[in-house]
Length: 428
View 1: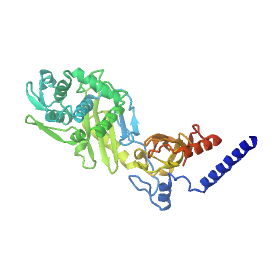
View 2 (view 1 turned 120 degrees about the vertical axis):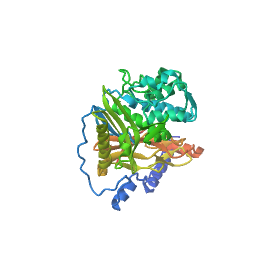
View 3 (view 1 turned 60 degrees about the vertical axis):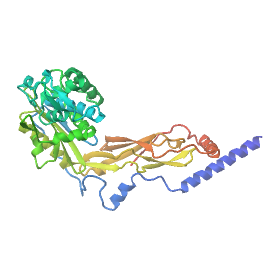
View 4 (view 1 turned 180 degrees about the horizontal axis):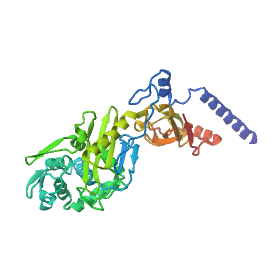
C-alpha cells in the first residue's frame, strides 16, 4: 500500500511538471500595454483628444475676485482647479437647475408631458414676484408644461417654478422635498433647498462643487432638457426675454448652457459648460462683482481647461486587457475587459508620467464565472496621485467543466495550493 501511494504521488508530480512545462511553452499573457508600446515605437501618440510632440508647461490656474469657483471635467468628474469649492454659498437662481432636473425626470419617466396643461394658481401669480425674474403668467390661465419649462430655464421665471411645483406636488414645499431627495441621490453633500426659485433663504444653500455636479447630472441624465439651456431667447405673453448667460453669444467659445443667478447678498453666479473635440468641461463662479465679470471668469476657467488639459483614453470598453487561467471550467482561460472606456483628464504632454496597475482577486480563477463578474480593478495614477479606477470584468460566461477536468484541476490546485484567494498586483 505504501508503495502504491508513493507511485501515485510520483505520477501526479510528473504530470504537474509536464503541465508547468507546457504552460511555459505557451504564448505569454496578453500585454495590456501592447497598444501603447506599439504606438510609442511607431512614433504615434496614444489615443487622446490631441496629439503632442513634447511636454507643455502648465501655468498657474486663473484666480478671480469672487467667493468661490471650480472647473470640472465632465467625463471623469475630476476637478481641474478650484477655490473654496465646498464653501457654503447661496445659489440664487442656480436653484432652478434642480427644479428643472426634477421636472425633467418626471418627463423622462413619462409621468409628465410637454403638452400637458397647467392651470395657474394665485401662489404662482407673477405679481407675487414683482422685484425678481418672472415669466409673466396670470392667475386662472392654462399654460403648457413646455412653455413653463422654457420659462424656468431661459427666462429664469420664479412664477413658472412655483406653477410647476404646485402642478406636480400640490404645494411648493412638497416639491422642495423631492428636490432634496434628488440632491442626496446625486451626492450633493453641501446642499439643502428650501424653495424652488432661489430667492434668498438661509436654508437654501449649496456650494460651487455641488452646482457643477448638478450641471453634470443635467447633461448626463436629461440631454433633451439640457438642450433648452442653449436657447438664447423665449417669448411668452407677447414679451420676449433673453437668456442671461452671456457666453451663449461668445463666438470664441462653444458654450451650450447652463444657468445664471444673482442675489444682492451674494453677487453674480454662473455655471457654464462647453464642449470641444472629445472634451466637455463645466465651470462655476460664485459671487462675482457683475454680470459681465461672472461671464469673463467662467470663460477664463473653460479656456484654461481646454488649452492645457486633454482627455486621455488608454483603454476602451470590451477589448481584452488581460487573459488569465481558469480551473475546473469548460475553457482554460478568460479575457478580462473594462465595462466602459477608461478616460482621464491629464495635463497636456504628461502621458509619460502615467502609471497603470491592476489588482486581480485571484492568481487564477475557478469556474463557474459569469459574464460581467468583477475579477479585479485597474487603477490610473499620475505622479503617484490617483486619477481613476475601474473594475476588470469577465468577458464571457464560463461554465463548469466535465468530471475529468474538474477532478484533474482539483488535484493540481491541491498540490499547488492555488485554490484559495491569492490577490495579485502588477504595474506598468
